[in-house]
Image (cartoon, rainbow, N blue to C red; front, side, top):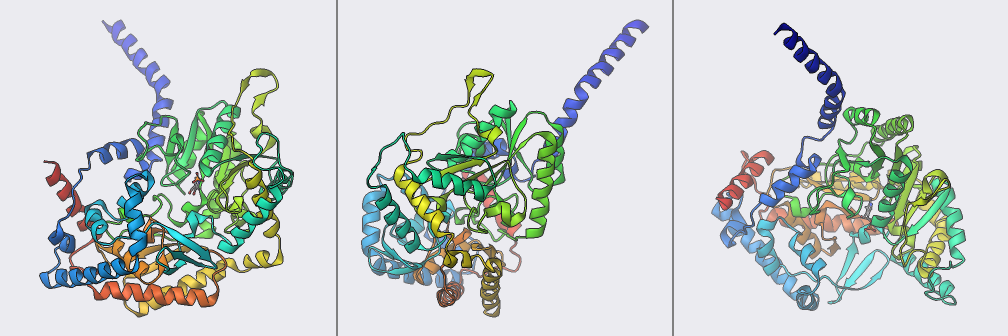
Length: 550
Ligand SMILES: Cc1ncc(COP(=O)(O)O)c(C=O)c1O
């Protein structure tokens, strides 16, 4: 009997010894996950699947925050005025949009998610916006009805130097590529120039060309797995890296991603995981997250309260990247900077130069194509090779019919040539001071006017934050549009300026921004019961959802 107990004890002790390290690693991994749903991809997907659809009727639309009747009427009148203005001003654009929308899946998606879903139906019925534009010039775009807007949408970040710059890149690039035409497989001579320049810019050895940022990221991760012979990629909570499976493990992807770890950004717990685990091939960093670590890209579609926050601390983020660099080097993990968005925008050599930290691989895209679609991977030679010298059948496959398209490559060459000119180089001098100063100036005006709105920025990339708990902040995008400011479908979550905004242009944008916010205040949307908090708003919405489901 005693002997059996001894054996059992021994077996338990041996198992504990055997399983303890695994258990500890599991616990460390749990600790390195951000407590929000954004940090728990699988749970987030399950929760998202439970959210029921419901839409507010007319009465609730104007008083979902239990505003008094007098206020709801003020909102109703303001909304009717705005709807009338939209009907008059955007008639042609709205008509063509209505005609096309039924057959354009992307448009159906974006127009549905411009504002929180409870309000979306009513907004779509009454505030009909056109999704078409006719022309662009300087920092302005013109719609089908001839309305001119200051462009704050920034073509998803592509438009860094102004529309005219890209028109010239495309025109000149097309002229250079015209003799060859769209011949694929063999290279246009611009490829050699681009490779040389991209090696200089990235400080890395080799380059591969792809058709989008998503594909570039996909290839960088695949190569990291191939060379490290490890399975997992690490991404940080909230970071966007395109819409490919592995980098989008949560909501939006119907398939569970088992080989992705989503860890807390700027957190010691995450470094501990990187130090300990042996299955991590690469760490993927989107430096734009420095503006809102651990939060998703801000979008008005999820702006249900005023909890959206943003603050950029360059020194703290640089220190974090430096620590990541050290751990990755120590552990043989491939450090990938995804500079598809910020590359070229924050410094001539991108985030690597800006933060003073150098990665093993860097992805670029967006603006680099000179206005045409592109994705690029730059990396150390040992990481970029797609085959093994000693195992000829073991390859890392990557192709793409339109890779290195002559017109794209030629436009890229023009882009890379032009960014060397003194005029463009000069734009980087005092860039942060300029944009930080502009943010301060606008915030001072908003504060002076007593408006509950502030802007935060990483250089020329801005996000709008709200200082008073409210369920209606998303309405601001419609007032901004009425003032001639064009935003992308994510609304006030992201304003992207091109660097050709002059002081006069900027002053005009500020005037219009303040005017829009004043109109919104006047119409009562920012009324708030003093007892209302962001938490109370969230709790109220949860109650609505539960009531709807049961
Ligand atoms: C950091 C980052 N990576 C990748 C992508 C995906 O690029 P694309 O839309 O060209 O596929 C984006 C797009 O916004 C991005 O911002």
